[in-house]
Image (cartoon, rainbow, N blue to C red; front, top):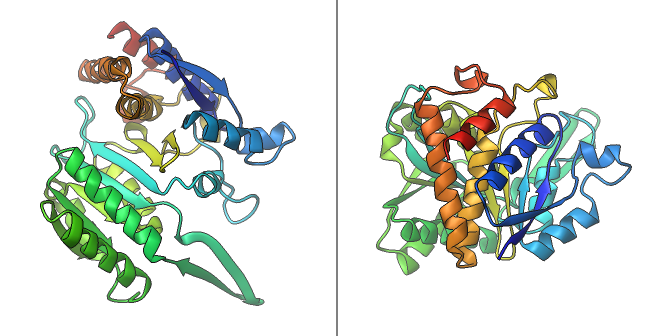
Length: 339
């Protein structure tokens, strides 16, 4: 049985990488059929809202989406469509697996970790006010409910995936109430529900130092929204950059898999973009469907595609951002040839 999946191409290079990934999945025989919907600048250009109701309802109905990068204006303009989509659909767990890839050079050769980020609260709650001209405030929100459920999700993920340790990054020495609550909830969930999973906590500045010194000492990293956003990109830098890591946003009723890099409008339409990050996210999507809908065909397609792009990279076939010469379409064709 084919699974209906919402495709949100995104902006900038989004349509190019989305089309390349869709081509690979179709050629791999992945049991999917697509419903395309818009969000971000592309939706505004069509005269709609930045996140149209039709797009949200389609994701709610199907339960799963693949999303290309969407533009977020800096310091002005519309709010982040990514943040709005996650909050609207209550996709509270952002998951970023980070591992070394054969053929992609980096300073470290032993990286295999997962960043789990609370996706709905913190400073990204968007509660900002101008108190008086020249003075603004931003409210950091933390609730016991959200802190507990993301901790439970992270520990459960670690146990299901055979991971040995969960490390919480925090700044509870300074933000004793918000980060203190996050840390206490994680400790309680560990002690009461997952005592068999190793647990540690690190102040985030010291944790980042240790990350760049020796990332192999980490397994699953758990943190609140802003920290998770920053640290997940830092971890991507350990293995070659944002073009070689996937991302997922998961909730109890839906899942959106996305490229974690930006929309790169400066190279849009030039066949230069690397589609690998979105392709890796699509593999996560297939594995998610295989797990949640007990579909072995999805798992088999995910395995074939992952083995194919590993072979492509091992053969030295890469896009320009990671030291190669291939364009967007040529990289997709190379993966198809190695299926």
